[in-house]
Each structure stands twice: as C-alpha cells, then as structure tokens.
Image (cartoon, rainbow, N blue to C red; front, side, top):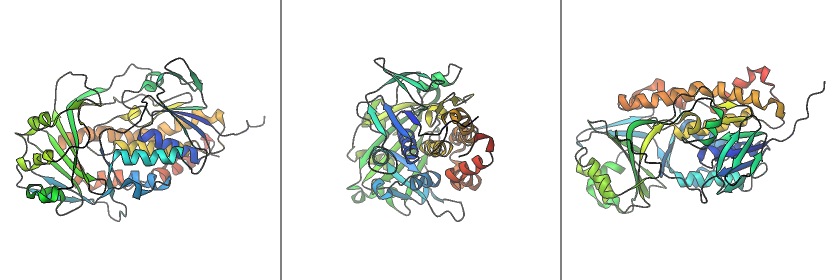
Length: 407
C-alpha cells in the first residue's frame, strides 16, 4: 500500500507566552500553518525580569532571534551577599569552554521579539495570533479545541502552552491534578535605575561583575536582584515563606509598603533602598505553585509544553529555558513533510525525549530552595543544564529512533 501523502501540518497552539510563541516560530520555519489562541485581549508578560541561560540562548540563536532587540545585560557571574551585608562571594559559571553566557532580560522585550518572529515577515507562513480567544476544552484525539462562545477549531496538532493552570492538560492527563502550593510567595518589582549610581548604599547592585545578586536570609527568604534593558531597569524578586491558603493568582497586586514590611527585618537596610527608586509598573505578589509529576504530556495529536507540563520553582532559573527547549524539540519532531498519521508517534517520542530532563529541573529546583543555591558552585549541575544543545540532542535522539519514521 502506498504511503499517505505528506503535507504541511495545521497546528493550534494554546497560549501566547514564551513557550507558545517559541513553538510558533520554530514550527512556521518548518512550513507548518500555525494558529495561536490567547485568552487575553492584549497579551503581555508579567514578572518583568527573566534570565536566559546558555541552553536557551542556543535555541534563540537557531530560530533567528535578534539579541540586540532583547537589550539584555550579560550574565557573567552571580554574586551571593549575606543578609547582613558583611559577606560577598562571586560565583562565575563553571562550565569549561562555555562561549555563551546568559542574558538578563525584560520579559516584555523577549516576548515582543518572539511575537515579531512568529507573526511577522520571516521563514515560513506567518502564524496567526488570535487574542481574546479563550480555550475552554480540548479533544486530544481529534486535534480540536473549543473556544469560549462555542467555536470548534480542528487541526492536525494541538499544543498546550497555557501555563501552570492549563486547560489543555485537563484533557491530556487522565488524573485530576491541581498545581501544588510550595509554601512560598513571591514579590516582584521593577525600578528605574537612572539615578542608582548617585546612591552609595546601592553600590552592591552594579559593582564588580555583570550579573545577578542573590541574598538569602536565615529564615529561608531570598532576595534576587539583577539589571535588564541595557541596565536602565532593576528587577527585584523576593521569595517569602507563606503557608496561607490564599488563592492569589499570578497577577495579584501588592504595594511598596507591603513589600518593605515583609522583608525589613530580614535584610540589611541597604538592600531595601532599591525600593526607594521609582517603580515602573505594578508591584506583584503571588503564591508559588508547581505542577505535580505527570504520567504523560501527550494524548493522540495533542502535547503539553512549558509550565503546562512541568511547572517548577524558579530556583534554577530554568522555567523559561525548559519551555524554549520543549518548543525547539517539537519542531525537530514535527519536521516539514511529516505525515499526519505519524503525529501521535512523534509526540510520544517528544515526551520520551523531554521527560527526564524536564523532571530533573522540576525536582532539582525544589531542592535548590533547601540547598541555598548549590547551583552556583556545582559544576555537575551547570554542565548538565548549560552544556547542552537542545536541537542537536533532539536530532541525535531521532536518529536513534528509526521507528518514528524520520523524514
């Protein structure tokens, strides 16, 4: 019997965050017809700051991202400061021969660059971004999503990139699973760094090396500070023990006063002087939750990626990195010329390929909370995370899996 004719795939991506947009870029470059469904009427990225480590940057370079558009600050090392301001240790990256260090970026800049690559001029047909389209259900076997209002959209592939509270996941995984509370809350703020150099008490932010500053407190709280957008902004993240059962979402608003009050007895006053600089945008606070280990990420012609599959704590700085890696892998597993009949097998192979690495990050991120960021003096972990090319690894895996019908 003759093989079924190959053609371009139609692909529905649920969620226009970093993972969803990266997948859209990579898959349109393969020639596929991509639609992205985003519930928000105007999609922006919250959380402000974001670190892209070497593994994620390899994907960004491969898909044609223009680093200059990110306006990132080089992440050459991490400085650990004691909460009383008396000690300072510099931790450079430990992987020998690593030519690409990280970048510290504003999430909006990364998001806008990925959006440009997804829907603008470029290789392959531009993706169609449908804002204000909330997906309320999914038929994984049929490749169908149902939008609020009743519209049903069929495709050859559905990708759930809709975050830790994923709707698509509810239809892919047989168990009823809810994100787990970690007992931590997180404050975030972005401040204007224009006049920072005029304040001697803030020398600890910009002196010595370019990179992030981590300040652990004795009670397990943690302050993370780094510049972004060419150094014009400072991103401030503070983790605090929080055993409340409040259902704060990802965009719960707070105030500078609450931020200061929560940490004023835990850190040296010089650290909190950052909060005296002009805040740009709202102060946010939310409960940190993680995705439990899933029995699968795929069903039929549907697959999960990013936080929908393996939402984790940010203590390895690899949340976005894993979503970007997932997206790159999916493009390798769904090349130009693939037959629709082979999609389920390809997605199962994607899950087999990505599961171990993503699970390592999910579990180790939780351990880092207790280890006090052992990442920064652990060459073995850094080598595993950073000395890794997601695209080459996916191609090597596929070469070993002839049964998946590589085109």
